[in-house]
Image (spheres, rainbow, N blue to C red):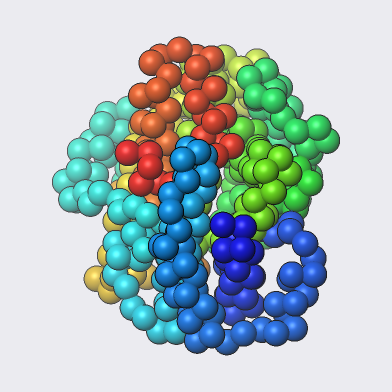
Length: 402
């Protein structure tokens, strides 16, 4: 299997030469990347070699060791995603659902417009007043913007509290660390660039106002116990301890991303269940940001209700990418049903343009990871962390979470 893993790594790096977003992280042997950059095989050659790798992996007998068996399934599914992405780059057209299945091993449920209208009605009850519901939500949220001059202090405090909580329950690799940068003109609000050797660069996009909930969301999602911890544990458990080279490269458009994004989003709830989060932020982050701590409960009650509209983004992306919505219609849908203010909705449509069906990984991914962990922890808080840690350290696939 190690020979197949080496070929997989080479193919991921090769496809990354044609698709700037494909290789999200690589910390394997530098000479492999230099070799690929020198050879720079064509898309047709990559597709041919990937097809051969599929055949080779299909012919391997499933190992008796459960983790080795997961490894083989992982390599097979990741190779399938690589084949699909190579075909897309060569002009193959897939529907939104076909693409998400081919790349991420999952298809998001479809919700009718009436589903989101009912959600909006519940939110409207909490925010009576004039103007559209999206305008009322935005006006409410703008009372909780982190001032730019206080942003770094608030994020630093959020990172500290997230790391401390995670370290209480998970054994983090020695020397793990990350740095934060503030950037502009991106299609995303935050990003973790894993560097290897248990280090990450986390970038925060400051194009739009940053609300108080984003401090813990980004500190958890991008850091602890999210992407930084996920990548660090995979490197320690599977690359360093077992020598599995395929985990030294992260193909963004692959099934691994549903696990990565889903665990990063669910990790927020693992670290800070709602009441605990409100209490912690009332004592620390709200005062640091110059916000009224007594309103933290109200803010997170509205935040939780608005969060239920997350699947509206999937519907906007599905209709837009399948040609039923224009960019303007997709943004309007996001404003109406995801309750995004227009500038944020337009930014999200740019995300659709760049990352396409990747959007399912955030909400469907969180639901699948949450259900997987909750079925196994049986309501026990420490067991929840244990199951979560096992998931972060293993090569499990989305289809294996059901």
